[in-house]
Amino acid sequence: MKKNHHLSPPLPWTTPFIILSILTVHSIKITSAACHVDDEKGLLAFKSGITQDPSGMLSSWKSGTDCCNWAGINCRENNRVTTISLYGQVDKPDSYLTGTISSSLVKVQNLDGIYFVNLRNISGPFPDLLFGLPKLLYVYIENSKLSGPLPVNIGKLKQLGALSLEGNRFTGSIPSSISELTQLTQLVLGKNEFSGHFPAGIKQIRNLSYLSLEQNKLMGTIPDIFKSFTDLRILRLSHNEFSGKIPESILSLAPKLAYLELGHNRLSGQIPSYLGKFKALDTLDLSWNSFTGVVPKTFSNLTKIFNLDLSHNSLNDPFPQMNVKGIESLDLSYNNFHLKEIPKWVTSSPIIYSLKLAKCGIKMNLDTWKPAETYFYDYIDLSENEITGSSVDLLNRTDFLVEFKAAGNKLKFDLGKLRIVKTLKELDISRNLVYGKVPAAIIGLNKLNVSYNHLCGQLPKNKFPVSSFVGNDCLCGPPLSPCKL
Image (cartoon, rainbow, N blue to C red; front, side):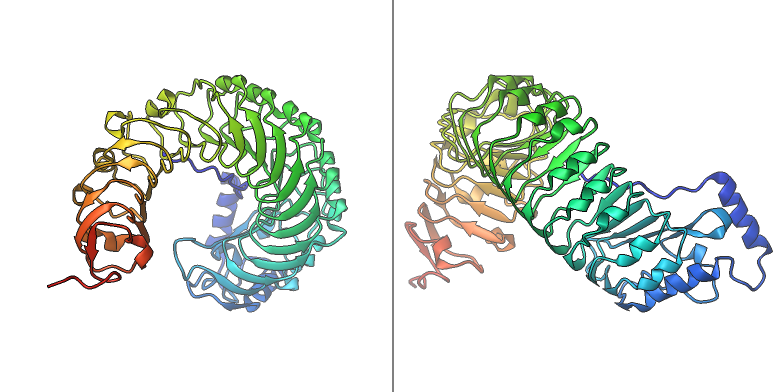
């Protein structure tokens, strides 16, 4: 049920007429390659700049063969190469390319799309060859190792409709000339090392639907420029050093904005009540800031929200009654809330997978909590509350749980009766009233903390430090003292 929020790039397309034309050319071809000689030279030059290709991503790129048939290559009119699409597979360690982007790629003059995504080890500076490709519309060079500053004249790429350099190592300030890229619908510069201020000139790029500057080193206030944007659906500014208040002009984004991510900054003041007007909002992240006051009652209007993270602020009671049909992930941890119980609109969600309510003033018996579903739960954090009862029934009804934290409560149950599913990687039930023996299944965990309970007996084979087990009644065996014979 978990939703993939990644916005896919515009994919190259080919009309049936052109497919038929290409097939016709193939059928009459005898010995000569069909693609243009400049295209072949440019692509082979790119390949020559690649020093490692362990998965054979470019193995079909061979001189004298039709480059329109090479992996990742699309051709359209007159058999000219128009797009290069090379995608590394994140779940396959050998699916990457090592090397640099050859400047000779500029020979492929009809390129309108370059998609180098998750190639991981492509290094070098910003590829200046892009300035020499007059038909270029879409550039996605994501999750690699390009570095250095962006060129000050990047605004000369006026024809671009989308630019994503996410997940590289670019540094320096974002050039002011970026405001000249007025045809962009997507500007994605997140997960780099940019510094300086938010470039206010971005307000000139009025057609943006997706703007990401997240996970950089940007500072200062967020400029009050958002009245310029009528189609913005995704705004990602989290994990920077922005300070001050949320700019009022963000209200103008209410009709269409689906993702507002401002977490992990230094923002302050009260959460604006107008955020309740964002009826299309899917995700709201205001976590790890310095917001104060109460959560606005208008949040009850956010009926379509799936992901809400207000954790690590200084927000106070009362928390408003929400009218959400199905929340997917909720984090209200480490504020000044006294919820007393897990909210009913959370309990009734049929699609929730992440629930984090650490230090939320919850005083309830966990045995009485009957959530509508437990199957999809990945993450549960109920730490630092006053919860009694047992977590056995809850956890034994989960199948994909990755993390369960309930430290600092009054839970009382036999640890030996807890089913530890194969997906579980972190378990923290320290500082409770848990008893019994530690099960052998803990060997599959990455992190474990069962300290300061009433556990007893010999520890199974494990890889955890002493701190994972101290403060129990009579545990023994490595890493604790040997058991007495």
